[in-house]
Image (cartoon, rainbow over all chains, first blue to last red; front, side, top):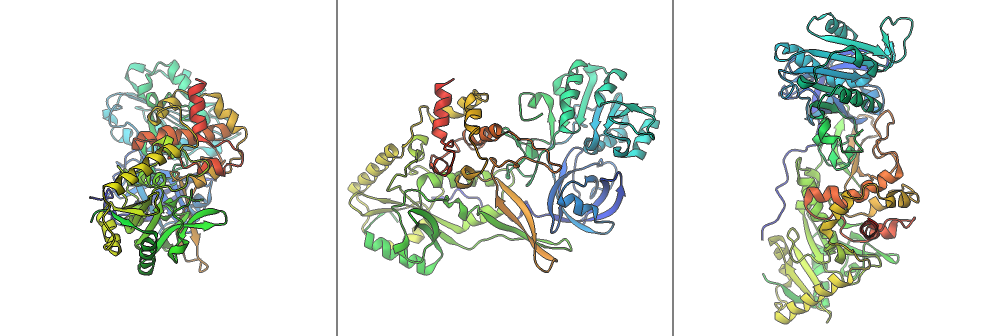
Length: 284
Length: 344
C-alpha cells in the first residue's frame, strides 16, 4: 500500500530571504518609503497590487504592500511604504540604508493593469495609506501610458500633513495626460486645495462607464461610500477592483487570520473584483 | 504480512519492546481523564480511553513550535523536526482529523514543518473501546476508518479481549515485526472485527445528526442570518476553549522571541483561535470580526462549509471535545446543525 504523503518539500515557505535597505525617505510623521533589494539578486517577479511578508529579526513579520511598479527599478528591487503601527513596523522605522531585513513573497493577486484595464480608461480612487499599493498600478499605467485611455486619479487624505508621495503627486498633476483631483477631510492653514471626503470629488470628473476600469483602495470605511458613487456612475461591478486589508500572518493560506468568510484574502486577494465579492458580507 | 490475532499479554510485550527501541506516544490516564503523552511502559498505555483531553494532532501541529532561528544580522535558518516516533492508539475520528490536516498543510504552499513530522511518524489507529459522553463521530461518518489510507496500523480489540493488529502500510508491517509468531486472523476474527465496527458506528452517536453530513454545507449557506448565531453567542466568553481542543482547528500565530544575548532568537508558531476577540484585528487596532456572533458563526461555517469546500468532507469529526470544554454549554455542533434544519 502506498502512503498518501508527498515527500517533505525541500523549501520552507515561511523562510524569509535576506534583503537590503537601499534608501529610506520619510513621507509623514508616521510613514516612511523604503527602497529594498533582494540580496540574492534573483528577480522578485512582482506585479502591482501584490504584497510581501517583511521580517525584522526579533520583532516578527508583517504583510506590506508593494508600492512601486516593476517597470521602475531592477527586477530585484522594490519600494514599500511602512506606517508605524505595530512592533515590526516601528522596528523598520529604526532601520536605514544598508541594514538587512528578511523578505518573502510576492503573494496574492494583482491589480488588473494588464487585462482588462489595457486600452480602457483607468480610474484610481485612493484614500490615505490605500494609495501605497495603488501607486504601483499608477506608475505602471503611466510608464505604459499609450496602452491606456483616460487616466483619472481621485485622492483623499485625512489632513494635509498625512499626504503621501507629495512630490510625485505634484508631477502627476503637471501632466496633461492625467487628471488628478485631491481633497483632505480636515484642512489646516497651509492647505489651499479642496476640503471634504473623497466622495465629493466624483461630481467633478467625467467618467465613461462603458470603457472605464476602476481601482479602489483605502481605509475600510471608505469602500462603502466610494462603491455607492461608482454604482451611481454606472461602472459595471466586474470592472471595479479593490485591495482589501486583513491580518495576514502566513501569506500562504494556512494561518486563518485573513479569512473573510470562505476566502483566504492572502490567496484570493488582496485585490478583488467587486462582482466576485459583492455577496461576501464580511468583505466590506 | 497479514493481520495478526494478538493476546493482551503479547500486545503488552510488543509495546514494551517498541518503547525500548523508539519514542512512542499514546493515551495515558491523567486524573480521571486521558491524555496523549510519551509512554515509558505498556502498563501506562490505556487503549480503553474514551477521548483524550487534547487531540493527537499536537504531535504534528504542536501547541508551540520553532519554525526557524535567526540572528540580528538578518540570517534565518529553518528548523525542521524529522525525529521518527510512533503515535500509538489514535481513535478513528482523530485520524480523520489528521488526514484532513495533511491535505490542508499540503495544499498550495506545502508546509515543511508539519509534513516532516508527519512523514517521521508511524501512526497506529485503535478502534474505540469506550464511547465518550459527547462523541458523535458515528453520526458524522467518522467512527471507523477501515476504508481510509494514510495510517500504518489498525488495532481492534475484539469482545473476547484479543486484538486484531492489521498492517496498513509498509511502515506498519515493519512495526509488526515483533508479532511474527502470533497467529494470522481467520474468518471468525475478521467477522468479530466487523461486529466491533458496526457497533461503534451505532454507539458513537451520543448526539444524532438529523441530516446527512454532506447536506451540512448547503444547510449553513442557507442560514447565515439564522437567530441561533446571536442566541448562542450571547453566552459566549470568547475564551477559545472550543478551538483549543478541536482536532481540526489549525489556525496559528507567528511570533519572534529573542534570546538573552539579544543577538539570536527563534520564530515560533503557536495555536490561535478564531473565537478569540482579536483574531482578525490588524495593526492599528481595526477588528474585521468584532462581534461575538460573527466569530461564533465563522467557526461553524469553517467546520461545516468553508473547509468542507477545500477538502470534500465535513471538518467536524464528531469527537465531542468542544461540547465538554465549553463552559457556557453552547458548543454542540450537532445541536446547531439540527437547529438549522428544524427551524428553517
